[in-house]
Amino acid sequence: MELVHAFLDHLEDERRMAANTVTAYEHDLATFHGFMTGHLGRTPDVKAFGKLKARDIRAFLAARRRDGIADASIARQLSAIKAFYRWLGSAFGVENAEIDYLQGPKRPARLPRPVSEPAAKDLIAEAEALNEEAWIGARDAAVLSLLYGAGLRISEALALTGADSPAPERLRVKGKGGKVRIVPLLPIVREAIDAYAAICPYTPSKSSALFRGARGGALSPRIIQGLVQKLRGALGLPDTATPHALRHAFATHLLAGGGDLRSIQSLLGHASLSTTQVYTGVDSARLREVHAEAHPRA
Image 1: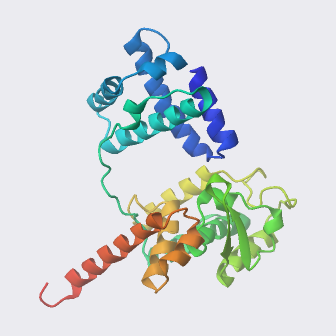
Image 2: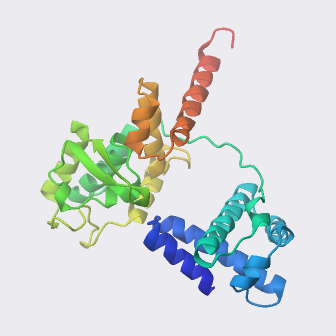
Image 3: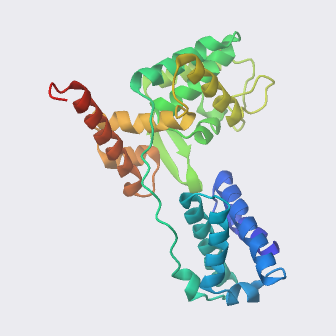
Protein backbone atom coordinates (compact mmCIF):
# COMPACT_ATOMS: atom_id res chain seq x y z
CA MET A 1 0.00 0.00 0.00
CA GLU A 2 3.02 2.33 0.07
CA LEU A 3 2.48 3.30 -3.57
CA VAL A 4 -1.22 3.93 -2.95
CA HIS A 5 -0.45 6.11 0.06
CA ALA A 6 2.11 8.08 -1.96
CA PHE A 7 -0.54 8.65 -4.62
CA LEU A 8 -3.07 9.80 -2.00
CA ASP A 9 -0.50 12.22 -0.57
CA HIS A 10 -0.07 13.58 -4.11
CA LEU A 11 -3.83 14.13 -4.41
CA GLU A 12 -4.04 15.86 -1.05
CA ASP A 13 -0.85 17.93 -1.05
CA GLU A 14 -0.27 18.75 -4.71
CA ARG A 15 -3.68 18.42 -6.36
CA ARG A 16 -5.44 19.94 -3.31
CA MET A 17 -8.36 17.55 -3.64
CA ALA A 18 -11.12 17.62 -1.05
CA ALA A 19 -10.77 15.24 1.90
CA ASN A 20 -13.93 13.32 0.92
CA THR A 21 -12.58 12.77 -2.60
CA VAL A 22 -9.25 11.51 -1.27
CA THR A 23 -11.09 9.16 1.10
CA ALA A 24 -13.09 7.74 -1.83
CA TYR A 25 -9.87 7.14 -3.80
CA GLU A 26 -8.33 5.49 -0.75
CA HIS A 27 -11.23 3.05 -0.39
CA ASP A 28 -11.31 2.14 -4.08
CA LEU A 29 -7.56 1.68 -4.43
CA ALA A 30 -7.23 -0.26 -1.18
CA THR A 31 -9.81 -2.71 -2.56
CA PHE A 32 -7.93 -2.88 -5.87
CA HIS A 33 -4.57 -3.35 -4.13
CA GLY A 34 -5.95 -6.13 -1.93
CA PHE A 35 -7.42 -7.96 -4.91
CA MET A 36 -4.20 -7.71 -6.91
CA THR A 37 -2.15 -8.97 -3.96
CA GLY A 38 -4.24 -12.16 -3.97
CA HIS A 39 -4.42 -12.28 -7.76
CA LEU A 40 -0.63 -12.06 -8.20
CA GLY A 41 0.28 -13.99 -5.05
CA ARG A 42 2.40 -11.10 -3.74
CA THR A 43 2.22 -7.42 -2.95
CA PRO A 44 2.46 -5.55 -6.28
CA ASP A 45 5.30 -3.06 -6.74
CA VAL A 46 5.86 -0.49 -9.51
CA LYS A 47 7.14 -3.16 -11.91
CA ALA A 48 4.18 -5.45 -11.24
CA PHE A 49 1.67 -2.65 -11.80
CA GLY A 50 3.41 -1.85 -15.08
CA LYS A 51 3.01 -5.44 -16.29
CA LEU A 52 -0.69 -5.81 -15.47
CA LYS A 53 -2.89 -6.55 -18.46
CA ALA A 54 -6.39 -5.39 -19.26
CA ARG A 55 -7.62 -8.89 -18.38
CA ASP A 56 -6.25 -8.47 -14.84
CA ILE A 57 -8.24 -5.27 -14.35
CA ARG A 58 -11.31 -6.90 -15.87
CA ALA A 59 -10.92 -9.77 -13.39
CA PHE A 60 -10.99 -7.23 -10.55
CA LEU A 61 -14.06 -5.47 -11.96
CA ALA A 62 -15.82 -8.81 -12.49
CA ALA A 63 -15.14 -9.74 -8.87
CA ARG A 64 -16.63 -6.44 -7.74
CA ARG A 65 -19.73 -7.09 -9.83
CA ARG A 66 -20.08 -10.54 -8.23
CA ASP A 67 -19.94 -8.78 -4.87
CA GLY A 68 -23.07 -6.92 -5.92
CA ILE A 69 -21.40 -3.57 -6.57
CA ALA A 70 -23.48 -1.27 -8.81
CA ASP A 71 -22.26 -0.20 -12.24
CA ALA A 72 -21.82 3.38 -11.09
CA SER A 73 -19.44 2.26 -8.32
CA ILE A 74 -17.53 0.00 -10.71
CA ALA A 75 -17.10 2.90 -13.13
CA ARG A 76 -15.85 5.07 -10.27
CA GLN A 77 -13.33 2.42 -9.21
CA LEU A 78 -12.00 2.10 -12.76
CA SER A 79 -11.64 5.87 -12.86
CA ALA A 80 -9.59 5.73 -9.64
CA ILE A 81 -7.36 3.00 -11.10
CA LYS A 82 -6.74 5.06 -14.24
CA ALA A 83 -5.88 8.13 -12.15
CA PHE A 84 -3.46 5.98 -10.14
CA TYR A 85 -1.82 4.79 -13.35
CA ARG A 86 -1.49 8.34 -14.66
CA TRP A 87 0.40 9.16 -11.48
CA LEU A 88 2.55 6.05 -11.84
CA GLY A 89 3.42 7.29 -15.33
CA SER A 90 4.47 10.74 -14.19
CA ALA A 91 6.24 9.57 -11.01
CA PHE A 92 7.89 6.35 -12.23
CA GLY A 93 7.61 6.34 -16.01
CA VAL A 94 5.15 3.44 -16.01
CA GLU A 95 3.41 3.03 -19.38
CA ASN A 96 0.41 0.76 -19.69
CA ALA A 97 -1.64 1.50 -22.80
CA GLU A 98 -3.96 -1.46 -22.21
CA ILE A 99 -5.30 0.08 -19.04
CA ASP A 100 -5.58 3.53 -20.64
CA TYR A 101 -8.06 2.15 -23.16
CA LEU A 102 -10.17 0.15 -20.71
CA GLN A 103 -13.81 1.23 -20.57
CA GLY A 104 -16.15 0.66 -17.70
CA PRO A 105 -19.95 0.47 -17.63
CA LYS A 106 -21.72 3.64 -18.66
CA ARG A 107 -23.05 5.60 -15.74
CA PRO A 108 -26.75 6.26 -15.99
CA ALA A 109 -27.60 9.94 -16.08
CA ARG A 110 -28.93 10.94 -12.68
CA LEU A 111 -30.58 14.28 -12.21
CA PRO A 112 -30.00 16.34 -9.06
CA ARG A 113 -32.93 16.15 -6.65
CA PRO A 114 -33.57 19.60 -5.20
CA VAL A 115 -36.12 20.40 -2.55
CA SER A 116 -39.06 22.58 -3.56
CA GLU A 117 -39.14 26.30 -2.80
CA PRO A 118 -41.70 25.92 0.04
CA ALA A 119 -39.69 23.02 1.50
CA ALA A 120 -36.47 25.04 1.44
CA LYS A 121 -38.16 27.89 3.29
CA ASP A 122 -39.74 25.51 5.79
CA LEU A 123 -36.39 23.83 6.50
CA ILE A 124 -34.77 27.16 7.32
CA ALA A 125 -37.68 28.39 9.44
CA GLU A 126 -37.99 25.13 11.38
CA ALA A 127 -34.23 24.94 11.93
CA GLU A 128 -34.36 28.23 13.80
CA ALA A 129 -37.37 27.19 15.89
CA LEU A 130 -36.24 23.64 16.66
CA ASN A 131 -33.55 24.30 19.26
CA GLU A 132 -34.28 25.77 22.70
CA GLU A 133 -30.91 27.53 22.60
CA ALA A 134 -31.64 30.67 20.57
CA TRP A 135 -28.07 31.03 19.30
CA ILE A 136 -28.00 27.43 18.05
CA GLY A 137 -31.29 27.90 16.23
CA ALA A 138 -29.93 31.10 14.66
CA ARG A 139 -26.73 29.26 13.71
CA ASP A 140 -28.59 26.44 12.00
CA ALA A 141 -30.82 28.86 10.10
CA ALA A 142 -27.76 30.83 8.96
CA VAL A 143 -25.99 27.71 7.67
CA LEU A 144 -29.05 26.47 5.76
CA SER A 145 -29.57 29.99 4.41
CA LEU A 146 -26.07 29.88 2.93
CA LEU A 147 -26.79 26.54 1.25
CA TYR A 148 -30.08 27.66 -0.29
CA GLY A 149 -29.56 31.40 -0.61
CA ALA A 150 -25.95 31.35 -1.86
CA GLY A 151 -25.55 27.83 -3.25
CA LEU A 152 -22.65 26.93 -0.97
CA ARG A 153 -21.56 23.38 -0.26
CA ILE A 154 -21.84 22.49 3.42
CA SER A 155 -18.03 22.35 3.69
CA GLU A 156 -17.78 25.85 2.20
CA ALA A 157 -20.35 27.28 4.61
CA LEU A 158 -18.59 25.76 7.62
CA ALA A 159 -15.22 27.05 6.39
CA LEU A 160 -16.29 30.66 6.97
CA THR A 161 -14.29 32.45 9.64
CA GLY A 162 -14.62 35.45 11.91
CA ALA A 163 -13.30 37.52 9.02
CA ASP A 164 -16.64 36.92 7.28
CA SER A 165 -18.57 38.67 10.05
CA PRO A 166 -20.34 41.03 9.68
CA ALA A 167 -21.53 39.31 6.52
CA PRO A 168 -20.26 41.06 3.38
CA GLU A 169 -22.32 41.82 0.30
CA ARG A 170 -19.93 39.66 -1.72
CA LEU A 171 -18.50 36.55 -0.10
CA ARG A 172 -15.13 35.06 -1.07
CA VAL A 173 -15.55 31.27 -1.14
CA LYS A 174 -12.79 28.69 -1.47
CA GLY A 175 -14.28 25.64 -3.14
CA LYS A 176 -13.13 22.30 -4.52
CA GLY A 177 -9.50 22.12 -5.58
CA GLY A 178 -8.80 25.42 -3.83
CA LYS A 179 -10.69 27.30 -6.54
CA VAL A 180 -11.90 30.71 -5.30
CA ARG A 181 -15.14 32.33 -6.39
CA ILE A 182 -17.08 35.42 -5.36
CA VAL A 183 -20.71 34.90 -4.36
CA PRO A 184 -23.14 37.78 -3.75
CA LEU A 185 -25.11 37.41 -0.54
CA LEU A 186 -28.79 38.27 -0.47
CA PRO A 187 -29.81 40.66 2.33
CA ILE A 188 -31.86 37.90 3.99
CA VAL A 189 -28.80 35.62 4.09
CA ARG A 190 -26.58 38.38 5.50
CA GLU A 191 -29.21 39.11 8.13
CA ALA A 192 -29.29 35.44 9.16
CA ILE A 193 -25.49 35.33 9.54
CA ASP A 194 -25.36 38.60 11.47
CA ALA A 195 -28.27 37.57 13.73
CA TYR A 196 -26.35 34.41 14.67
CA ALA A 197 -23.06 36.26 15.21
CA ALA A 198 -24.77 38.82 17.48
CA ILE A 199 -25.94 36.19 19.99
CA CYS A 200 -23.29 33.48 19.63
CA PRO A 201 -21.54 33.07 23.01
CA TYR A 202 -18.21 32.41 21.28
CA THR A 203 -16.37 35.24 19.55
CA PRO A 204 -14.23 33.91 16.71
CA SER A 205 -10.93 35.40 15.68
CA LYS A 206 -10.43 36.46 12.08
CA SER A 207 -8.95 33.05 11.27
CA SER A 208 -11.12 30.71 13.39
CA ALA A 209 -14.45 29.10 12.53
CA LEU A 210 -17.46 31.38 12.43
CA PHE A 211 -19.96 28.59 13.07
CA ARG A 212 -19.48 26.87 16.43
CA GLY A 213 -20.71 23.70 18.04
CA ALA A 214 -22.47 23.70 21.40
CA ARG A 215 -19.14 23.34 23.25
CA GLY A 216 -17.35 26.03 21.26
CA GLY A 217 -15.44 23.95 18.73
CA ALA A 218 -15.82 24.29 14.97
CA LEU A 219 -19.24 23.08 13.84
CA SER A 220 -19.18 19.59 12.33
CA PRO A 221 -21.00 18.84 9.03
CA ARG A 222 -22.57 15.85 10.78
CA ILE A 223 -24.51 18.19 13.06
CA ILE A 224 -26.13 19.89 10.07
CA GLN A 225 -26.74 16.57 8.31
CA GLY A 226 -28.41 15.22 11.45
CA LEU A 227 -30.45 18.40 11.78
CA VAL A 228 -31.80 18.16 8.23
CA GLN A 229 -32.59 14.47 8.75
CA LYS A 230 -34.63 15.38 11.83
CA LEU A 231 -36.34 18.26 10.04
CA ARG A 232 -37.36 16.24 7.00
CA GLY A 233 -39.02 13.74 9.32
CA ALA A 234 -40.93 16.51 11.05
CA LEU A 235 -41.90 18.17 7.76
CA GLY A 236 -42.73 14.95 5.91
CA LEU A 237 -40.04 15.45 3.29
CA PRO A 238 -38.40 12.59 1.35
CA ASP A 239 -34.96 11.13 2.12
CA THR A 240 -33.58 13.14 -0.81
CA ALA A 241 -34.04 16.32 1.27
CA THR A 242 -30.41 16.69 2.36
CA PRO A 243 -28.18 19.72 2.93
CA HIS A 244 -26.83 19.31 -0.61
CA ALA A 245 -30.40 19.29 -1.97
CA LEU A 246 -30.60 22.93 -0.82
CA ARG A 247 -27.64 23.75 -3.07
CA HIS A 248 -29.42 21.91 -5.91
CA ALA A 249 -32.53 23.97 -5.15
CA PHE A 250 -30.50 27.19 -5.34
CA ALA A 251 -29.42 26.34 -8.90
CA THR A 252 -32.76 24.92 -10.05
CA HIS A 253 -34.82 27.82 -8.74
CA LEU A 254 -32.43 30.36 -10.27
CA LEU A 255 -32.73 28.62 -13.62
CA ALA A 256 -36.53 28.48 -13.37
CA GLY A 257 -36.52 32.20 -12.58
CA GLY A 258 -34.63 33.04 -15.76
CA GLY A 259 -31.00 32.78 -14.63
CA ASP A 260 -28.51 31.92 -17.36
CA LEU A 261 -26.31 28.84 -17.14
CA ARG A 262 -22.99 30.68 -17.26
CA SER A 263 -23.91 32.83 -14.27
CA ILE A 264 -25.17 29.83 -12.32
CA GLN A 265 -21.97 27.94 -13.19
CA SER A 266 -19.94 30.80 -11.74
CA LEU A 267 -22.04 30.99 -8.58
CA LEU A 268 -21.78 27.25 -7.97
CA GLY A 269 -18.05 27.11 -8.72
CA HIS A 270 -18.39 24.40 -11.38
CA ALA A 271 -15.26 23.95 -13.48
CA SER A 272 -17.29 22.81 -16.49
CA LEU A 273 -20.55 24.16 -17.92
CA SER A 274 -21.65 20.57 -18.60
CA THR A 275 -21.83 20.01 -14.83
CA THR A 276 -24.25 22.92 -14.51
CA GLN A 277 -26.31 21.83 -17.52
CA VAL A 278 -27.78 18.91 -15.56
CA TYR A 279 -30.09 21.45 -13.92
CA THR A 280 -31.81 22.08 -17.26
CA GLY A 281 -32.92 18.44 -17.07
CA VAL A 282 -34.41 19.04 -13.62
CA ASP A 283 -36.29 22.09 -14.87
CA SER A 284 -37.60 20.23 -17.93
CA ALA A 285 -38.69 17.27 -15.79
CA ARG A 286 -40.62 19.60 -13.51
CA LEU A 287 -42.32 21.26 -16.48
CA ARG A 288 -43.45 17.85 -17.71
CA GLU A 289 -44.88 17.05 -14.28
CA VAL A 290 -46.81 20.33 -14.17
CA HIS A 291 -48.09 19.76 -17.70
CA ALA A 292 -49.24 16.23 -16.87
CA GLU A 293 -51.00 17.39 -13.69
CA ALA A 294 -52.58 20.58 -15.00
CA HIS A 295 -53.49 19.97 -18.64
CA PRO A 296 -57.22 19.31 -19.10
CA ARG A 297 -56.50 16.36 -21.40
CA ALA A 298 -54.02 14.76 -19.00
